[in-house]
Length: 263
Length: 327
Image (cartoon, rainbow over all chains, first blue to last red):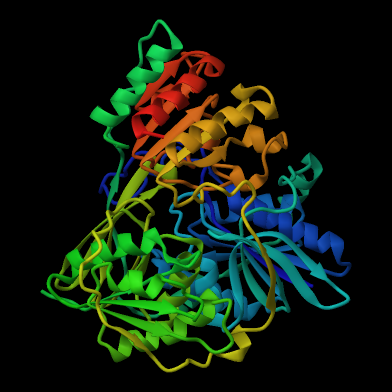
């Protein structure tokens, strides 16, 4: 099985968030770019599928500026991906959702795959639209909020569950499909030191910015006008009490009269 | 400048989803006197069309789909884009749900329009839209400008208020059945199981969430959290420590690797406040923490805190809430 897994470099969860000088985005100074959250799960899921099905091949792909795009690919290679492609972000363009889906479609057509995996959303901008947009662009079935993804080789079908408002749905769908993953079967593995060293010598293919520019075309872009930090939290108003009953009464009064969150 | 707005509604359990009513509220504002059309996909709609007709829209269009149920998001984008083109719609709004999120991505491609998800505020100018959306798990937000003339906004649950039902219903019209591209319809849904422990509201769209953490010490103590949630009509969540330990299924997990919630009120019980958890709930409007450790990081992000023994605090708290709510 050919598996394509898209990963996005995002700031490490503990990173300090500051607006950059023009106020329109995150200041990248001192930020460590990593593979996190749902993307880690997507890589783990890709590797689990590969291990379950002999002869499978996993390619990880990232889209972003150097060097962060390459760093997350090295991390995915160290975890066990077979090959990696870095899609260079054209300088001077801040890609919007349209650019993103057109770029993902470009790469998906270049490396035909039975399964295209993405995390259900990225840990930074939390858009969560890429999987279904890519499915629509490719004209393939696509599902997000997916857990328990497996492949039944005998029937050539992917089986999975989709976590929705009204319940957990079970699905059986033949490939090729696009999946926005909520969770892998198990916790993402950590890379062994020897594989980290080995990954540094592995080649990374590159899709140059010129090809991306041609694929996304000229279109009106969504632009970030302001990157805003919430006012610093001053810490909780602590409820003073001498008995648990008093604590309960005071808290309920605050929630009703001050915060006005329930009648 | 008035504009024609389409609200893609959703039937959940035979009723119009609350998130759809919230979208109607914003649609009325952004239409600036223009028309607001509600659309419902599929045929298993229960009372949703009638509820939609009284939600504040000018008309409701029903779009039956060939091959449905279940209504699948990606294949539905084509018929909706076609409808939007035929009716000169310039803005499509969707309430926040799993289905709507899938639909939004596919609709952006089918209708060739910019889309924004997780929207908590929106204003319209003649040639563009400006929206605010939380990012980084609520640790920051961005003002995003979508170029005109078209735009698609997926709203964050609980960010907008739903208008009161109207006395006179808007007309309901059923459109012809849409054929869908067979390539998108391969595969089948083989079953649906209700969300485990799902007597309360669904976690990601709930207006109030009560979550329990390691401080509960043992799985059987989780009932204290469930009793508090029941007194509030709230959904129940859990920290990763609880789901990892198997006290609750993974579907309960709030945090970076679980669900992101944005309720009006979030009560964290026995949760220390690791960043992993915080990014899943920081955009709640009001956060309450109950923890016996006064230096727990959760108190730095909470609005109200009780530093005390949750085993002593929770029973009288549930009782007091029941009393004030007349339960």
